[in-house]
Image (cartoon, rainbow, N blue to C red):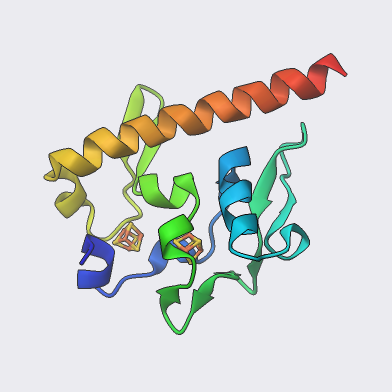
Amino acid sequence: MTICMDMKCTKCCQEREIVLTHDDVHKLLTMGHYEQTFARPSKWGHNLKELVFIQGKCIFLKDGICSVYKNRPAACRAFPMTLGDRGPVIDPSCPHGEHFRNDPNFKTEAEIGLKLIIEDIERTIAYSTKK
Ligand code: SF4
Ligand code: SF4
């Protein structure tokens, strides 16, 4: 069981903006989902993509459970670790942040995940500004 399941929490699957990396899109496509249904252009431009939310809820949230859990986007895996002004921090909006703060495995994996997300975003922006 994960901390989120233990706590029966899906707060970060609602009212959020989740960037999709190329790898995220690829994994969701391999599950048979159509990109048009789960990805939309990010408001930040540069061909960046974000996960589709409808009426504030992620389209993959079904009956309080993530229906793509094994292939959920990197930003979902890393949360509540986010990038603050001075580096990775536990986002204060997570009501169970102390559990993540005390989990060294989570911290290591989330920091690696954040790094990969940032690298993917930087590559996408660099490619879009070259064209
Ligand atoms: S990361 Fe935090 S806010 Fe998101 S579902 Fe888990 S406990 Fe809830
Ligand atoms: S993909 Fe899964 S974990 Fe990520 S926001 Fe949607 S329901 Fe939540």
